[in-house]
Structure formats: structure tokens, C-alpha cells
Image (cartoon, rainbow, N blue to C red; front, side):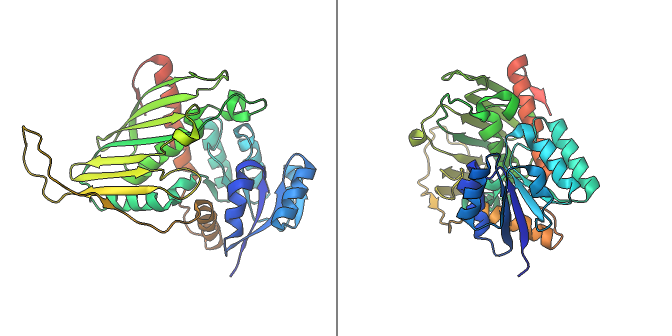
Length: 347
């Protein structure tokens, strides 16, 4: 099988923990080169994953003729510059979220890559989660009727740390919402197939001392009328977290615990009702046993990289096009405005 040859810019962090191990499992992808600012770190990663070359400069990796595509996992501040450099050298690009510091900057990357003729996708890997796929299928098949309400919560414990770039707005573009909440916003739109049209939000830094928010709650009105809530926090201990995704409709519900995150897992129970019946003033509930939906877990990063590689090798549409990420970032920007201006923002 033909393989897409990859280089990784920002090969530590999430790339080392998740993306490169996922890439190594793909039968249509090959790791050629890694880049980190510290050459010793880069060489260590090169040896760890049996890559061919290690670099400490993006430009040197991008000049490598054996690299067909790059995965960019650097601080958000550098995304636009690095993506445009990659496009200049004809490299296809999978870039971590958020795409850029602002939606306008993100759109400029899209326009640039289109002009250069390279594919550009963004790392919303949770779309490839096993339970996310099941939830989407059930919603699209109408198994819970018309979706009227949704809830997603994604959190972590992220205390003050020196040199943590996600805690510095000039490097990250935002805090818990921009780092974690945007995954949930993307999934709500992806699963329901309905775009967000209005946003109301509250954000604050309640626990720590950094400049970005450690707490965020965003209410979304979808085009189909459903009202959904996204909660993202940097101040909930991991052991206490429930990475939840829930949808309620006119004929049932889908409730997932720990179905989002960096690892494929969790549980999903559902209630599907054919006969809802009339109004009951006594609120006597029918005894309906939830259905526990089973899946075969996999590696979301492997699926993400396999999908991107397949799109490039066979010139197919991307499953996570960058335009989706720009639209999600516009929603996040509206959420920040809503908090600052204390009003509902139209998208």
C-alpha cells in the first residue's frame, strides 16, 4: 500500500503522547522526520519512533523532499506562520486546534493553502471516537426524535505552571474554552448537523492566577432550535471529571460518560421511544430500561491520521476540513464577546 510520508513540527507534548503513536499504527502513513526546538529532544524522539531525520528548525524539515505532509502541534501563536511555510513547500497539513489565534487568521490560512493547492485539516480527533460515531448515527437516524437539548462537559486539572503556553493568552488565544470547549462545540454541530446561530456565555478565572479563563459555560442555540450547553474547566480534578456528552429529544435520550477526551472509551446508554403518549399530570414515568450501547474501542489519533492520509493519497474530501474549525472559532469568539458585553451574540 502506498504511504503518505509525514513530518511532525512540535513533536513533543500531544504529538509524542498521542499523535505519533497513532501515526505508527497506520498502514497508509510513514513517519519520516520530527522537529523540536531542542535538537537533543528531537533526536531522542527520532530514535524512539525510528524516524529517518531529526530537525530543530521548521524550515529544514519542510525542505526535506521525502516529507509529503506535516502534523503541526506547536503553540497556537505559530500556527499561521508554520502552516503557510508548509504550503509554500507543497506539504499537506494536519494542524492541531485551534487553527489560529483568531478566526480571521484561520481563514487566511485556508485561503493561502487553497492558493498553493495543499490540503488543510484541523485536529478535531474526537469526531473519530467510537461512541461519538454511535451518537451521531443515532441522532441522524432520528432514534431520539427531534433534538431539543444537549450538554457537553470537558475538563482537566491545570494549575499554575511556569512557561505553560496554554496559560498565556498571547500564545494560546484563550483558556479552557479555546483549549477544551471548542472540541465540544465542534461535536455538537457535527452530531446534530445543525449550526450554532446564537451564543450566551460566562467565563472567569476562579481558581488559578493565570490570565486565561479556568472556567467557562456557554449556551448555544442551534439552527434547528435546540439549546445546548458546553462546560469547560481547567480547575476540576481529573479524578472527579465526567467527560460527558448528552442529547435529549422528543423520543428519547443518549447519555455518554467519558466518551470524549484523548482516549477512546466510556459508556453510552440510550432510551428510544416509539410511543411517547399524551400528557400525564401526575408525571408517572413508564418503566423503560435504558439500552447500553457497546462499541469496539480504537485509537482516535490513528483514525484521524489514517483518514487524512487517505484523503491526500486518493484526492478525497477531508473528514475534518479547516473551514469547520474556523466556524467553531467564530463561535468561541462570540462566547468571549457575550461574557464581556453581557449579552447574547448572533453568529
